[in-house]
Image (cartoon, rainbow, N blue to C red; front, side):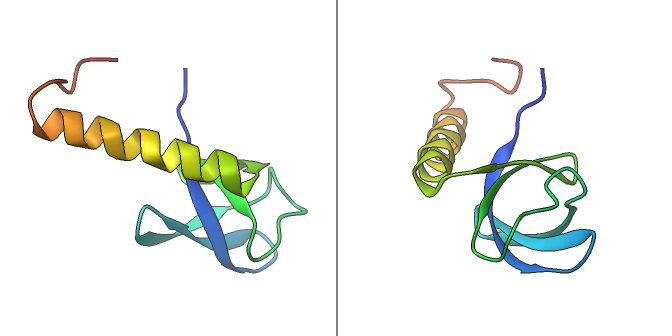
Length: 82
C-alpha cells in the first residue's frame, strides 16, 4: 500500500510543480495529473503527484498526518505501527 500526503500546488511547468506539503516546498512530477493548476491540492507519494483532491480532503488528511506525528512524539505510536 502506498500512502500519499496532501500538498498545494504553488507553481507549475509542463512536467513538474512546486508543491507545499506540511510547510515544506518540494518539486514533484505531475505527469499523472496533467490538468493540475496552481492552487489545486494533490496527493504526493515518492516525488509524484498521484491525484487531484479537494481542499477539505487535503485539510483532513494533513490533520491526520499531524496527529500521527504527535502520537509518535508522545511514544503512543512507534515507527513500526501501521
